[in-house]
Image 1 (cartoon, rainbow, N blue to C red):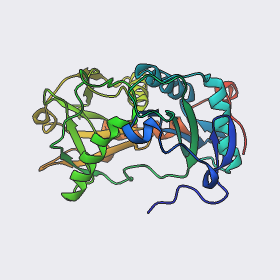
Image 2 (image 1 turned 60 degrees about the vertical axis):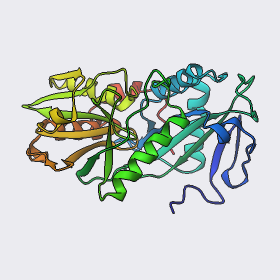
Image 3 (image 1 turned 45 degrees about the vertical axis):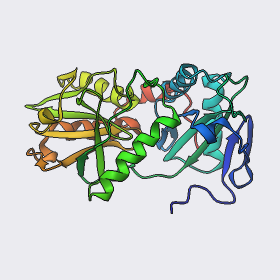
Length: 307
């Protein structure tokens, strides 16, 4: 089993920095019993200047708040407060390249009433790309993404991820690296924990919003495409259309940008190293460590601190 903390690991818990091994929560929490919580997956990187930078920290903590509000969880923290706390967690644990997990969770409540308060925890640990660095063998899942008429699909809510766990476990039990889930209309949706793009004749396509989590890395890929003058289109499409693509990739904070080798019995024909998708992967890796920023831009970047 993976080890995420030790006896010296420090976390942020409800305004205090405490040892992870000594932290406590209420076992009657509505979050434990019903999956009623929201979270973010964030990464920090050691930049080319040797300093620590949380990537897209404002966007992530804005989404954390929006997720909580969407599912009626009280939320009373500012983004600046939580960003400062996160940098302190990194500093106290001597981390630079890290995965960061803030969670907003509920108090004891066996009813379905709205709570008067929420709690927050921020944890961080070292983690390699979530899906590895080799091209992926992907399986079309028998599970669908939750119907947005039944869930606040734009919220990064813990309960939604039972669907993700089931789909990913199914794929791995069948000898694949990861799953690809359709939506309720049998259009391509996303991976259990990442969005998807495919490439055809040098142009990129990605599922339109509505039935997927609007990923921050997805938005970053769209920004990279705009900067690099790569044509990209957001639209609904089927698995059959995807199996006519030249290349494809997943993208997410945990996974970063990772290409496909195959989908079910279809092997993507374009050599990954020669694809536009590979250019996106390389541009993303440069962006998160600020390799493409000028010194003037680096100096203006918010909250870069040494460790």
